[in-house]
Structures are given as structure tokens and as C-alpha cells.
Image (cartoon, rainbow, N blue to C red):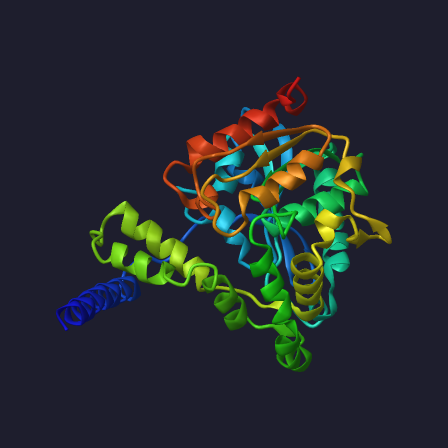
Length: 352
């Protein structure tokens, strides 16, 4: 009886702290406000954001194209005016472009992964043509797979590749979880068939399933933040981004859930792009693979499987999480500056 009462009291205390944190988040005054980049190119609902006007005037370093995942908003790579991966690279003298997918429109609802890879190539073409030189492609999470697949077909326009928390072997650490996700596909089909999309709420639920207690922990933590603190502002910025999700085109969802998670087609060598297997061993240029040590979304072993397949790959394991690569207080030192160092001399960065 005493034990039950103690458990109930602890549960009430934690729930109360969580609700206090949620209330603090909802009433926080922060709203994202940044100086907007230019738009270089548009295709369908996608656009290519151009950060060159934020570049250090005295430098003109290697151009880079940032390629985010399809399942979240691209501005995670430009989250806050004073804490932005894109602006950090631009201020170091790079011509920076960000491929902003946006939500699928009428055209994109028919897209499969091959269509998005073709669009990625056209974005690469636009950047290379604008700068008159090959570019470095930087892919984040799923964006890394798109970057690799797109670059394989146009190696004359991409001279370096950076993969940030990019999965490849979807059965590396949690095969049962991956197969369980694939088993959900028949139940998701009626909604996707009707709408042409995998809905945002479904995607959010799938991510929440990776760590069901995360919401409790994070809102209990924010309940103790000073409203005016940098930590509170950063929390709200990230939480706003997490809640600003986009749907996934139904054909892409089928490709990913059945092909990647179910059949592990990438690691098995059976995933095809342009009718041919997408083979990382055919990538001949320097690659930097950043594999976060505390990643709960992409198991490190999944990303290492890709790094091991690339012939010329430098692997780094920064002490951050998956989203922390963009948001953590130590992201500049642990992730962004090593990226700059690699970009300054990709060939010289290669292990002997």
C-alpha cells in the first residue's frame, strides 16, 4: 500500500512538472526571426535558398549545397540567427545553398525517391552553374542518402561529400524495430491512398515511438529554465521546428518503409537508382562521415556501414545527438568547425 502511494505521488509530481514545462513553452515569447536568404531556384514546392550575401566578403571558398531530410523542415540547418549551421559556413567564406523541400504539392505527391534524387541533381547543377565550379554536397540524415545517390551520377559537379548522421544499414542495431515499422505499412495504406501522403501526425507518432518518455523528460527539464535564458530560447526554437512538420509523399513513404526498413535494400545492395544499384563503392571523391555518438534516431552502426563502404572516407564521431549536430551548444566546436576544416582541403583530409 505504501509503495503504491509512493508511486502515485511520484507520477503526480512528474506529470505536474511536465505540464508546467508545456505551459512555459506555449507562453514563451520567442518566435523565429532571421534575415532571410535569397532564392536562387524553384521547382515545384522546392526552392534553393542562397546564403551568399552572408558570406565573408574577403573570402570565396568552396561552394556547398546543404541537403536536409524530406521528413522535417529544412530550417533546422538555419534554426536561429545566432546559431545557424548555414550561416556559420557562409561567414567562413563559403557560397552556401540550402535545398528547402517544403511540403509536397500536387506534383510531389506522385514523387518516389528517384524523383527526389533527380531534383537533387538539378539543384546541384544549378549551384555548380551559378558558381562556375564543382561543389561540396552536405547531406543530413535521409538527405545524406539523397546526396550520395544524386552525386554518384554527376561526379564532375561534386568534388566532396559530407554525410551527417546518414543511415545505411537499417538492420544494424535494431532490426526488430525496423521490421516492425515495415509491418505497419498495410495499416498506413488506406490513409496514404486517400490523401497521397503519409500524414505529419503519423510521422510524429513514429518518431515518438523511438523514445516514448522523451516528451516527459524534456518538458520537465524546461520547467526549470529561466524564461529569459538562452537555454529556454533554444528549447522553444527546436520545439517549434519539431512541431512544424511536413507530410511525406506516399510513394516515398512506401520506398522508405518497405525498401529501406523492411528489406534493408541499401545495405543489401538492391536499392536501385536510374535502374542500377546505388553502390557507394563507386563514389571516387573524398567523403567526411559525421556519426554522432549519442544518436537515438540513426544508430551509429547504421551510419558506419555506409562509411565503411566508401573508398575515401574520413569518419568522425562527435559527442552530440542526431539533432544536436545542429542545435547543441557544442555543435560549433564538435561538428561545424570540423566540417569547415574538411572543406578547406578534402583531399588532404583523407586518411593515409
